Every structure is written in C-alpha cells, then in structure tokens.
Length: 170
Image (cartoon, rainbow, N blue to C red; front, side, top):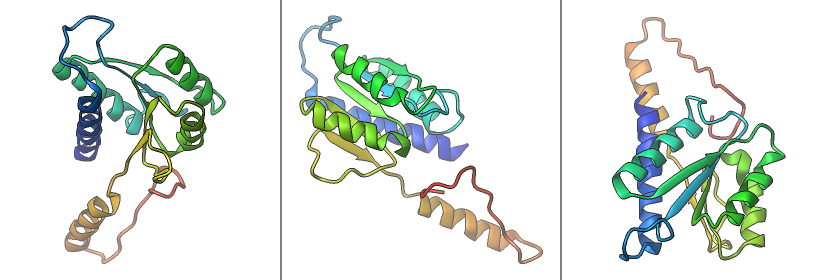
C-alpha cells in the first residue's frame, strides 16, 4: 500500500514540476487552464497499480493546483496511438503514458508532434527527445528493504517472491 502511495505522490510531484514550467499567472479561465491527460495501458484505470496511482495523483493535482485532468483508457495495444492522437487534437498540454507498454507509442508521437509535451512512466526514451520526460522508480531500493525484513523475520531461511508479470521492473 505504501508503494502505491509513493508512486502516486512521485507522479504528482513530477507532473506538478512539469506544469510549473509552462503555467502562466493570467486569470483562471478555461482556455488558460493547464490540461493534463493520461493514457492507460490495457490494464485500465482501476488496475490497483501504476494506472490507478497515476490517476489518483492527477486528481490530487487537479484539486491542489487547479489543472484540468482526464484519461483515455486503452482496451488493446492498438488504442495507444489513437488515444494519444485524440489528446493532441484536443490541445492537451501534457500527455502521460503510464507504463513501459506505451513507450513505442509515446516515442512515435514525440517524433510526430515535437511541440507536444509527454511523460512516460517506467521507461527511459533517452536524451534525444526534448519533449519527453521519463519517470523512473528505484524499485530496487524498496525491494532491498523488503528483502532485508524478510531475511530478518524468516523462521525457515527460505524467502520467495511472486511477481505479477514478466517485465523488466519485476
């Protein structure tokens, strides 16, 4: 549970910092409101993981910072580009791709729309993309602490781990 809160807080912090760069101090009208939208991977917005944490972070940013937030849920991988393109067409200021599965769609979109700002969670697209910010987590640090606690509390000297998917971060 603490990990999900950490992910949500980190995402909100990164997004907040990104927003401050482009926000103006003009009167708060609908046209001047900074718009952030996220694109989920196929797990959906209520996945009890990255998508949900990112959405909760965006909702917190909306409440505390007055930004406008929304999301596009992807039912299949072919929806990634379509969802991103619809957000570009809607003049969204910042588009967040949640999870490494969206990396190729964000990369392609960053090339097609060099003026559009993107965030990709849990993937590093490198320095060649000036319009993409990567959000990476030091999962090894939390895993180390969990392993330390498990090692100190085991009664059998056997410790195991069951990951949800076979992906690099797991």
